[in-house]
Length: 216
Image 1 (cartoon, rainbow, N blue to C red):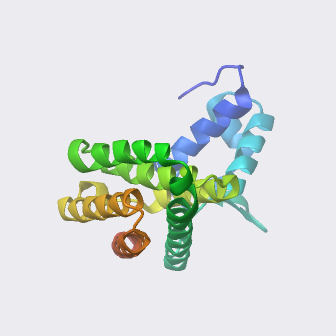
Image 2: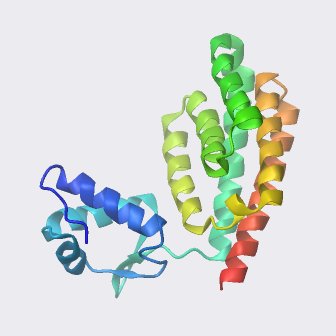
């Protein structure tokens, strides 16, 4: 069992607990008891309590009125709502980039072209590519609050991401959408970018719901 050092215990407790949740070592619905987790990792309860509170803020842990804390367990409605918000944020970011930012800062197009080249001609890491595309669009639009919200949504998405990364048909379709999104933004073609974003989110949501239903 991993034992934590006494350097930056709060951050270490947070990172290990988060990874345990994302890797399903602590499956959805698992009750989290700070005293038990502290004993498991060989630390005091205070950094573990702080880690749990931080993960509540990110949406990976939920507070139950009677049973304390447990690992976030998404429902189909949760999945639908998350993808609805992701579509809204992606479209907002692409719109701001195309209408406001890129015309005034054309040097940023070089970063988008580099991302396009990486995803569309070189890379084979689907999960990394998918996260990079959306993170780049949100980051370049320059709104820190949108970035924070999207980061939390992305973290929650990782809790129910299952077989897409190993399904060649899904990966091929997703990569096609990724390239179209990049092309639309680079070409300052809002209609093209928005159309690709909507298709991408629609396919991703359908895949996530299908995976979730099969796992039930």
